Length: 447
Image (tube, rainbow, N blue to C red; front, side, top):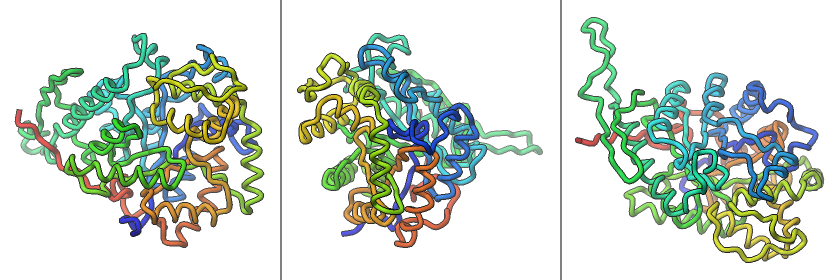
């Protein structure tokens, strides 16, 4: 049975000058331009030229400092800072036309009204291209930047996230679509009968509402979620319209795809109404040998402590207390990213990696799949995953930028188009149009 969607979806997951921890040292990048809007404009235009559904910026609310309980490794060995992604996509909305714009905002270290207002504003300014990646954050470093000593435990932060989403959606729906009248003759600007209080009182939040931004072009910005733990999967089945996930193998991806679609029934959602897009790092060469040379060079450029710093940050656990020349020890579940910890532990055990070797591997892709080969070989793999119901598309993680994305657009996208797997042109103007998602009707609470 083939995929129920006729065309796959592509996101451009953008980070610094590339996702590979050796990418900042790779010859084809603009490492000195990371604070320049012109750089982000250039990269966004490449993705838009490739007819990508969206570009996406992740976020962490701290510099990684769990390894050795300081930020020496992360600051020394890779570009560890992050611009505010919500501000960044707002700026990019002014210099792009069709591509969707997704940014991360944490439900643990934000308030529902502020997030609802920001993304509704971006959706208006971009004419319907905004998307919010909902995360619960991962570590104590973030907590300490928001007046807390430690990160919330896994269960509590998902309970908070659940209530957070309920409030945000009610705020987005607090203005009906036809609330604005703007009648100069009668002097009526808006119909107050079509603007509604929220009056939410819950465990974590008290929000009166209504939102002070009218309903946006997409009705609601598109909701993205990336958790793969059991609790994260259930949360995604309830709320997500797009899921980003790390799936290193076809079998694991098919299990995840089937599981998510199976969970949706209890929330009265139709299978296929969420787009599942695993992350993949394509290293493209015009020949297989060229692609492998690029991968080898990138690997050589990774300092082991760069990867271990990232991994410690993700796990919310200081790996420096262990011998780097020994295997990863058995660890109790950390308070960080539980699904990523399971992937890393499995990889280390199966391949007998020392901690130093694991650091280099994690720094390469952060447990996402690396796909090295020619355009045809990469398209073959994409087609297999798509046709075997392992995904609805892919979140492309260029190893280096802008070159890695440009190579994908120039070499792989035409191959996908030739096979009828990907669009030649945009057929709509909003991100919901690109993804084939319905515009939701507002749910008005009578209270």
